[in-house]
Image (cartoon, rainbow, N blue to C red; front, side, top):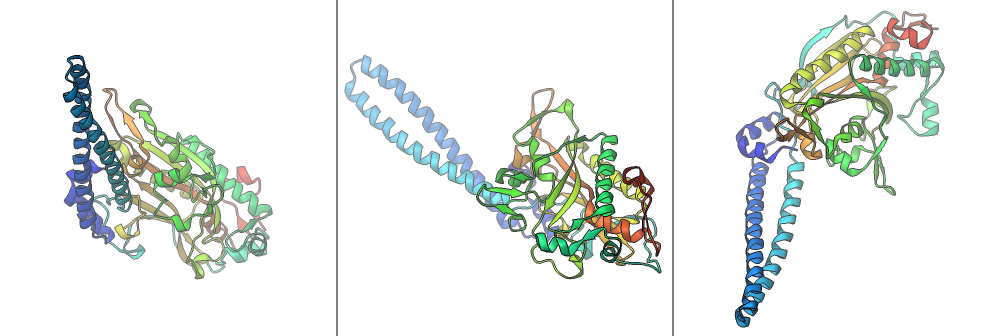
Length: 422
């Protein structure tokens, strides 16, 4: 969440920035500042009273030694009243802090200066593109290719679990696993340390990265154990550093991890969900960075470059979009989406989001950097899909079908051990 000091020092700037999301936050920001003022006043009063109670307690002992029993009794009454008042003040202070945290959690991150105002994906900016986005005469959607070559069984997934849970089979399973290993190997070459995290997280972890309470209804929840199935590896990997003070010399911290991801995707329908386009369970390789604030935007560009390199090796036409304020995630200050062109469907498919959260997640998680001089500050966190498998696999199948067989991208052949699917 936004830092209180940042809100106080940049009140109008934050209000103006949030208008890019079409959010009028002036009233909420004013309420936050007023609550913080109330908190400071309550804390000041409590500290004064505690000091006064300590002083009076010391004086009672002196009065008793001097035989001033009446004065000592009066002082005891005063300390008793102070103790009761301080208890009430302490409870009031705790409630103010809860109210303040609750209100802060409702305010999304303030968009970066480069982000344009906009309501939805139609207002996003295309930054650059690579490759030729064109349909072939033999263009075939991946769900038909998957059935023809026995690669993915969508109906069997419905039988076992329900819609949105496909079963990968034979060369389809091998191709999926090869993509995962290729992405992990490329990450390792780029200096990322692999992590295999848990696939269920507690509420504190969901809050730390901002999925809770914002996306509560989109997450699968195991009520008996009070745990959530992860919607992305970003959640458990970033939360490795919750309540941690990292040493400045150890930065940047670069992690990569493969996990299945689980999303309810409530309200999705139509062509957006057909085949691999939108699933309830899917595989993804995620990269996470913990960065110094002054280096985070250079790191963001390097992550985008890394994802672009993966797409170029797969020879998939793609474009890079900078999301407008209204299309960005709740916790993001700046997000780039990367989309590949699907020849079989004749449209662009999002395969990666790369975001800089600045201090928003770190402030929630109490993730701080300790400098050589001993000073502490919030870190910047970043993450990006490198890459999400379903639509990548769909594009690989569709874009490499020549009418009679599917050519495996050259970079994957060492992993699949076969060159074609026929």
